[in-house]
Image: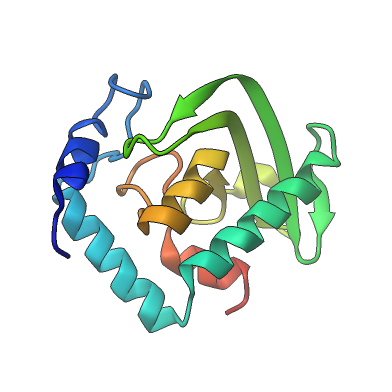
Length: 157
């Protein structure tokens, strides 16, 4: 990955307390460009397409919104969607996105048994944009990390 000046500026805004309280990197110590390169390789290995995955996560969020904050079954998944007031900026300065939180998990797994990042994905409108526009799944340990293997499992790719 060739790092452009706009990437360097975006990477500098990803730490905790800059754009979001927890930031975008979680406990990941890898350089941001390395996170992106490794996640791109994982997507390729798993046969995933960034744009198609982003579109499917967006569709699931729309379906989840029909539950009015309660989990609803969408295929083999339970989807719960909520939102808070306000907007979040993209670290690349290419848009503002509503504060949302969508969780998806297998419908046959009780919520109490779910471990975030292992059995459940949590994402936002901004997460979808980061995935589609920048191939950025966020760092390991980030509350909104889109783990490629879990995406493949949930979307049955």
